[in-house]
Length: 332
Image (cartoon, helix red, strand yellow):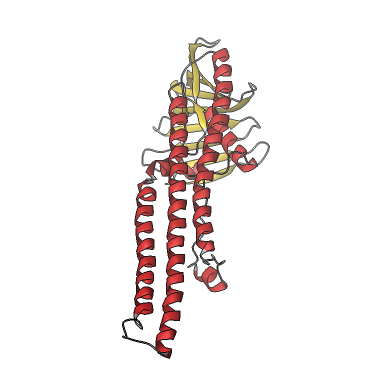
């Protein structure tokens, strides 16, 4: 499995190097016990302590135990070897992966819990942004290689243990119907994140990058518009921007009141939505959002805590919200 960053940080591999010692000791002890009792049984006729048909049967039984003791010892040694190999593979992979993360985060980047490289929210020019985006992509390719190695090391340990067990005749069976129905079957551990070299993995990383770039500021401008009103523009990493304007309005009032306007533009410069926020004479907070297709969503929050709203679809009949205490999630 490919672990997330928090899960990998919680993994402690010490048991993988101490357990093999105990396994080998117990394996040798089991074999030696079978050898000793078999030898003692063989020596009984010489000591005139026991002979005859029953003794012959006992000798055969202890001979089988001796062979099985050797198999137990071989199994213990095989499992111990798999654990030792797994320990070295896992610790090396973990160290390399975390070292790579540390190198990446020493600059203007950070790595998410799902091993996605993102650019830190710092102001930079368009040329610097383009260069850092290319560097981010290069770092992601390097990190993906270490993530794959980490997952392969974990899978290799499981495979090594299963191989050692199969040599001793232990075969893992598929869950039967009863186990599936009752949920008692032990499921194979699933990766915390998709394989970064697979299509789902590539789509996952791209989605995280796009989502982050759309909300991460890379530049700020202040100024005034044609009417002399103060404005503030926030430029995002993906090329989109938000323009905030402090203006006035007569909406919902008989006198001029402050109104705050937010205009959202996509990376191509197209206006996506305009949000206006102001208060009425009755001290109600009004939020009005106009989308590019002409749809208007307006909500009002009253002093008593209740809210109401109205949706004005483009060229369609308005759809009102009831005046009730509804959560902000309902109005999204």
